[in-house]
Image 1 (spheres, protein in one colour):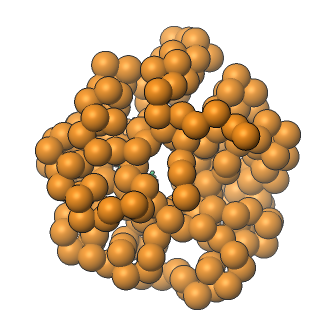
Image 2: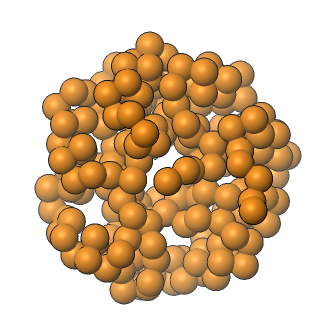
Length: 205
Ligand SMILES: Cc1ncc(COP(=O)(O)OP(=O)(O)O)c(N)n1
Ligand SMILES: Cc1nc(C(=O)O)sc1CCOP(=O)(O)O
Ligand SMILES: [Mg+2]
């Protein structure tokens, strides 16, 4: 499987409405601390927009709702994985991306044959408090050697200046939150990300 090299992560459907029509081809809905009814509503809205624009939608954490709503890709961290029913996710035909932060987590991730492995935080992130020090670029190369053809997603503190570094050190894809959602011009910044990742993009058939 190939991933688009630009992976946008947002926390509500209104961002999907704003940014996916610009040309985003891979987006994660990462909703925290909202009632199930709102999660479901945001997933429905995001699905409709992504279907219309040929964008792959990934649902973070809420794997049961993702199955119920007919989504086809979920992202889980290691703690999520402990609670999740991976057989049910796979049985429903969903793809699965997994977060990793150290060797033990990588081993756990590989045991479920993930559709991608994410490594982070590559750089310091302001989005959430992390217990891991920044991984650095060399770790991406190590991870890519270990996972072979499974796509590698780099995440954490990425910005336009850091894209080339992560892609040349082994990442297949760069995931980003605040460089876009806290930008003064999220639409403009999204266009810049699409352009900056163009060399890793396969044109649609
Ligand atoms: C692409 C990608 N990589 C890592 C994460 C983090 O997942 P997790 O460790 O479960 O933390 P939360 O995002 O749920 O706070 C991610 N969401 N996406
Ligand atoms: C949600 C998340 N997970 C990470 C991990 O390392 O698993 S880093 C991260 C935050 C990414 O946000 P930004 O692009 O604003 O740094
Ligand atoms: Mg999670």
